[in-house]
Amino acid sequence: MPYYPQEGIRNDQKEGNVESRARLTPIIQANSARAAAWRVFFEASGRLQGILETRLKRTYGVSMPDYNILLALWEAPGHRLRMGELAERVVYSPSRVTYLVSNLSRDGWVERIPSQTDRRGYDACLTTQGIETVLAATELHQQTVSEYLLDGMTDEDIEQLATNPSLIRNPRKLSALVNNARAAQKLRDQGGLVDFMTSFAPPPREQPLESTADIPTSSPESTALARALKQAGFSFVGPTTCYALMQATGLVDDRVKGSSPLLPQVD
Image (cartoon, rainbow, N blue to C red; front, side, top):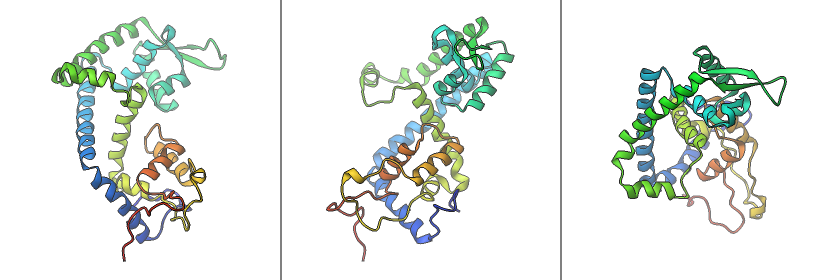
């Protein structure tokens, strides 16, 4: 069954769901090469993440989320960050960061100290033991990435990756990319990501928009979708991003007067 999180915006018409899903089909078919490339990347990154997790845990007792916390603190001025800023850096929820920092504090790698800028707040700060751990773990991390990824690439491949301006370089967004892929897998029991998104599709517009100036950047449906995706474990998914996603997949039709139909008419 499709996932319907909000009664007020769901599409109860079965035909509507089929139509919305049909809109996705041409995109998937037209970009089969891109879909294949994404699948390779998704599977390779997932396997590499699993290998990194196993090696770090076995060697230093550090999970990948632990390592992300330690690395963010190592890169910060003075090796310390406000708890809220740390959550933004690693793209985790504040409650998850609090839990992870508590565990790292217990192990002696991080300590919570009163904030220098907010008397009511606390900073997470690396200890000497934490610095030694993150440096050793980073060396293992780099060795593993080289072994399973970079060693199989030519110098030209690496140079292209290093200089390609279209590639995502923000570590938080790269981490979110892998995290969101895993979150999408967990939606299979609810019909999959397509059914999840389709359940937020608004009713079709009765008339095309007057001009491109009338095209919105978000909607109640995209806001609800963003909220539901975050609850499902996704990150970097705000109402504007979700509206762009709904546009790209055909869930909303923002055609203006004089433009061609989204799909050919079927008699």
